[in-house]
Image (cartoon, rainbow, N blue to C red):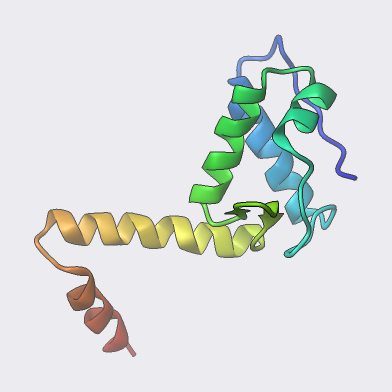
Length: 115
């Protein structure tokens, strides 16, 4: 089981603290790729926070590529923080390319041609 802790009186938003604690647990090997996380309501109870706070943190980590949501199977660790950072930066690159008029297939071709 992961050890998670938040500081309700601290300056950092609770959902960011929850995401950071789960991120740290993954980085420290407390939760490895393929491991399932406890349900959001259980995490919320352990942390004594609202379940919506936990859900917001989990969605953030999903968007970073660290977690995977599967209907009927719960939430599992998808990758290490390093891979999550690559996913995050890739999304930024895709958004940047789109703002400059490039389609995804054009961006992929640019990447393929990089030595």
